[in-house]
Length: 105
Image 1: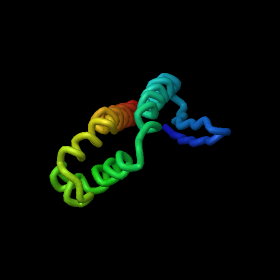
Image 2: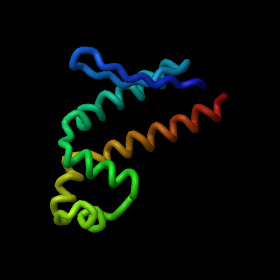
Image 3: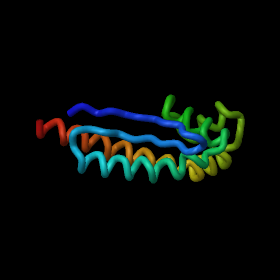
Image 4: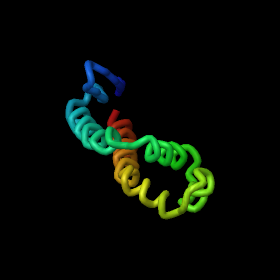
């Protein structure tokens, strides 16, 4: 299966999508991406900074607090506002779905 990712900026509206030869997969993943973007489009720079560090380094909240020179409670608040655990669940679903689809080829 060949996947195509597109990102388009038109005026102020943004789009992110995945297109493959599997229409059912396209519908599922693109719905999940649109829902994920509801959270991501509202990230402040501070929340985005937290997400970047979490994804790149996989540190505990206490460790991220030290990196950012803020309290652990501030890291916890950024985590809540990022909806990162839900976004990671979407990523996990996506990887599992790709693996499943590869088995069917």
